[in-house]
Image (cartoon, rainbow, N blue to C red; front, side):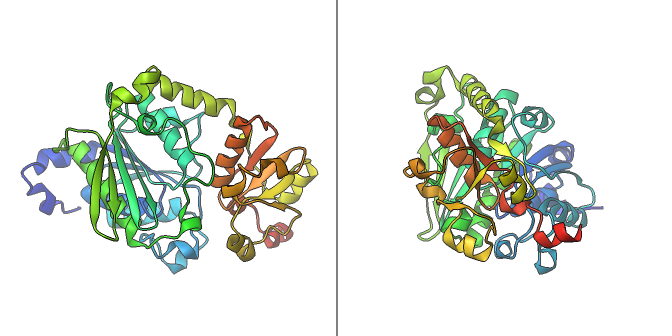
Length: 360
């Protein structure tokens, strides 16, 4: 049996608090640099049920910050690896893996099955989708992001009158505005620190521990060791546009209207036969390391907004590493009236390698 004696000795936890954790259901979206410490600490604390959402496979470049895995795991699905590690750490925890990203068609139903959600991706689209689903289901949401040596943390309580992500930033930023770890680089401990902060916020909510009365975006700078709290005034946010619930409904409706943005192909030849021109939006070093080996136009995601008129004519399929940057770029371009723009679902990572196609 797991031994929780070190935390049950805390007056605010005790056996009653431990029972709360055992009954709790927490969904963790992303099993990467942020998700690894979140999953580790929540499983170690005895949270009874953990849902894990991650559609990626482990890459060697992940290992310096994703501490649940090791070099023997490269190429395997993170959701499966994380589930095995949690079972080894704490067999008392029930794990529900989701190997495909949540989408507008199922996210509200999935959120409704959990007491709390921790969003741990570096995908802006996922954060906005999660925020809207949290508001509509009343499910508390803990958001974090990292950029090089800095991080941000926000707790969305999903209570009426409390602010949400859209109270700060009503609309999802354009592609390339917020860089990912692939584009910007990151030191391993940075997401580790922010993920640990997400874990403590999750436990505070589950155990009803004291939290700041104000609602703020926490800014962390790990170079100079400083932190700031940026107040979020709900009265100046979504309240000016009908409230958080209305903003969330509008946000999900917008995503639903553009649900055909993402197209799934396992072979780029199939995409070209279907009439799609390929546009690679990755950075040059990514392309050098893993070329498409197919005719394509190159336009980095950070520049695609200002160079949209240079895109080839006809149906276009944007391609990036995992489908995140291309998805944001496609939605942005559609917002400008370019309705024949699509994104490769899952990106290059979702393509079947040529050797496997030949073998099959």
